[in-house]
Amino acid sequence: MRSRTLLGAALAAGLVLAFGAAVSQEGGPIKIVPRLTGTADPMALERVPALGRPVVDDVRRMRNYPEQPPVIPHAIDGYQLTLNTNRCMDCHKREFTEGSGAPMISVTHFQDRDGQVLSDVTPRRYFCTACHVQQTDVPPLVQNRFQDAKDIGRKP
Image 1 (cartoon, helix red, strand yellow):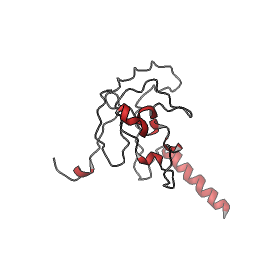
Image 2 (cartoon, helix red, strand yellow; image 1 turned 30 degrees about the horizontal axis):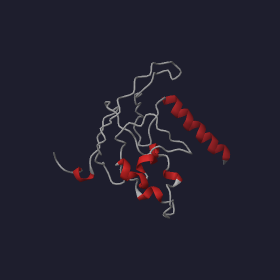
Image 3 (cartoon, helix red, strand yellow; image 1 turned 135 degrees about the vertical axis):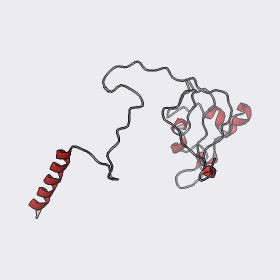
Image 4 (tube, helix red, strand yellow; image 1 turned 90 degrees about the vertical axis):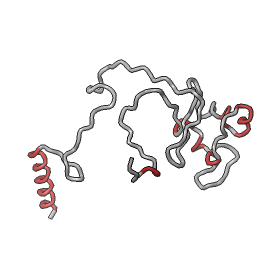
């Protein structure tokens, strides 16, 4: 029985190699997606393009979907975000928001994974840039076809 299974697997592998075409799980040919960045040779040295200018207008942006983390509307160059220091908390922690004018971090940042409210920011929400990103003034790398849920199915 085992030899038949091995023989069948060898024949299947031989067919794939003989025809030389890979197919996707849906049955169609696999599409090769062009690289977004970098050179074709991953070990080649390439000049790194300059970073885009950060958007620093301090304007709160509308969120695209519920529970979307807000974007960072100000410069964060040089912000220290380590195990012992989180410069974001200098303005966004509850006790500092009145003086800084910054919005207070969400109450969800004080809840542990069991829903218990802690007296300080939970460790799993401590590293802000894991979810919150600064916007830059650059063209998108790929086309964005996002549609708001309220607009799906509507005709233009």
